[in-house]
Length: 229
Image (cartoon, rainbow, N blue to C red; front, side):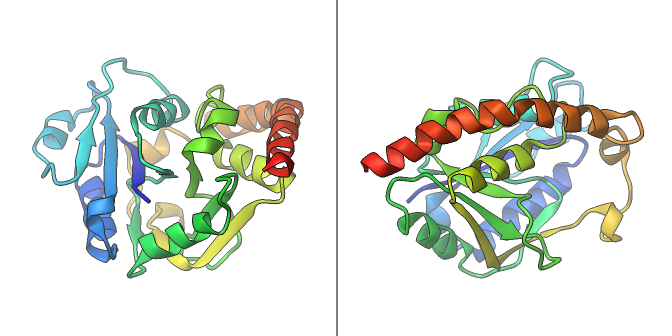
């Protein structure tokens, strides 16, 4: 199976490069992994992204400043044609050798492709944060995550849908360490600060509650497809 790593990034060209290097370095078969990167054209470090090594990275600059992460992830998902779509971020590092084998094995257990597989973020907790779905999953949802979120709750939207069909798979042995400043693993920066202290999380939480009926409607269609298969 081919794997697409989908990553919007802002202000962090080196952190993206470190993430990409860790993913390719630890993959058993790096040739089946492709990175999809988008960064904003108004990013002060935009030119630095242009200078990154292009190895196995498909570069889609965002020419419309102000677009939110859910929109950018959805666009990357539409552009990718790999079997597995893995939503990652520029502040993680792949720590598990052969992570691509682990991920592929999870999807091979469910030939219908209707599951959400998510990784261990380094805190060893069963929490859907960086997740992978299949192209067939996308046929039911239309988008990787609901595009109406400002930033937060996209992962919870996906996890809630996965739980509604009984298909969430926590890959405890696949560690993508979240090098977030709130865990003391990185300095705070403008990208982190822009998402906090302005009510964005609260607004997205309300949107999540409003989305529950739509999640159930999608789940009904998925469950019917699972039975038919």
